[in-house]
Length: 81
Image (tube, rainbow, N blue to C red; front, side, top):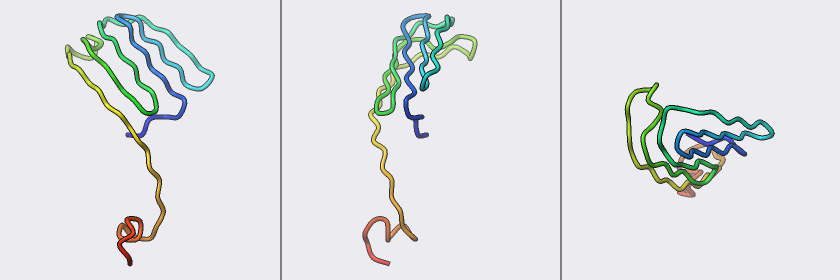
């Protein structure tokens, strides 16, 4: 799943802040987590929104997005035709 450009999500306890382009929103959720999600990084720790079921965890992720063109996987990878 490729993150949307300019989208940033920040969680601090029950406060959820989401910014996408010029749109910004803040909401209170029944959760207890700290996290950040941007285009190239994701970090979350804590208990997720209990309305979606009880789940807890720790997630860390670094992302790098690549784009390529070609007629076949071999062509894109530089392995010939």
